[in-house]
Amino acid sequence: MQTYNWPYKNELDITETLSCDVLVLGGGLAGCYAAIAAARRGQSVILVEKGATARSGSAGTGFDHWESACTNPCSTVTPKEIAEAYVDEQCGYSNGIAHYIECREGYDRLLDLESFGGKVRDTDDEFKGAEFRDDETKLMFAYDYKNKFTLRVWGSTFKPALFKELLRLGVKVLDRTEATALLTTARNGKKHGAGACAMDVRTGKFYILRAKETVLTMSRPARVWLFNPDMTGLCEFRPMQSIGSGHAMGYKAGIEFTMMEKSVKGEFSAAGRSFPPYGAGNNHNTWYAATMVDARGVEIPYVDRDGNELKTVSERYYPAPGQKFFLKGGVIDNPKYEYRGPETLDFEELMRRGYQLPFYADLSRMPDAERRVIWGMMVGEEGKTKIPILKNYTERGFDPKKHMLQSYGTG
Image (tube, rainbow, N blue to C red; front, side, top):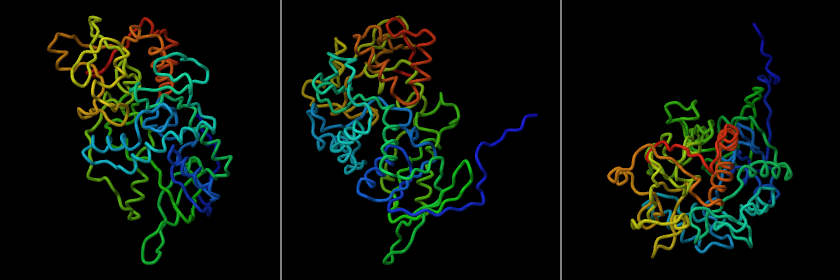
């Protein structure tokens, strides 16, 4: 029998009280930016993260594109146009103010990240001359090559760069520390945030964190509805710690919730935002717009929103005649007609025409730059795929120039 020695000291009987101007709960992208913004204004800041801030949150292992960067120098749409489209597409059940801020400030935040050391441009000229690249700015674009408001980025560089900036600004980072409850006080008869309690998950030390202002940036509940969240092949790609503990603390403290009237259909392993599609051939999100073939090797046609068949790969990345822009990516799965982009022919129609399952993504039929940006960059930068997918598949002999990957689901 072997005895395992816990490598961290026992601090179960220790309570430490810390004070700051601004307390940020959650060290993902939002939390890091909130802490940096406060520190830039001369505030003393404590950031609490249950994981390791340098690699925590849904962006921790990377991501491949940055949506709604409407103010980048190549964009032909305005923040107002895209924000209003998001709200309209969801029949008003959406936060218009948040969408507008995202569209108006998204590119500014990318410039911040670039100044921190994150990679935003194709500075190595790997894709020089590609249709999705602007050779003057070296910015690269996804989905809509005409309007250019979604950028391809090297997201695996972002969290380490943000963490480095936090430390440079003097933010006190409490990693591996779980916030357990919000502290409140009464001001002029109204409840007001006064900080939080937290616990070091390795040592057991208990923290009382007092703050003039508390910013809650912990992730929404994303894993509690899954039947088997321990099998990473059968769950969405958000991190395991996205359990909604921040929402639970807020509820107990009496925080007002908004957007509770909105609901979306449940997601499973092939629903577009989950893990398996990144390691299996498909034509959505990271893989958009991969060439798809059926079991016989017959290519599946792409059509625009009006059903017109598209003859070239390039046409898959442009709006239909009379359409100003289309919406793609992680924001909307099945947009209304007005915002619908090029897509493979409807599954029922494919079955009617005699196409045979299973379907495959065949990148060998795509132009070299399109193939390399999907398999090398997009899959290489998206969360949970650089090592388990790109590296492992490549080491085992997968070559996108000659091999296909099966698509699980209807394409």
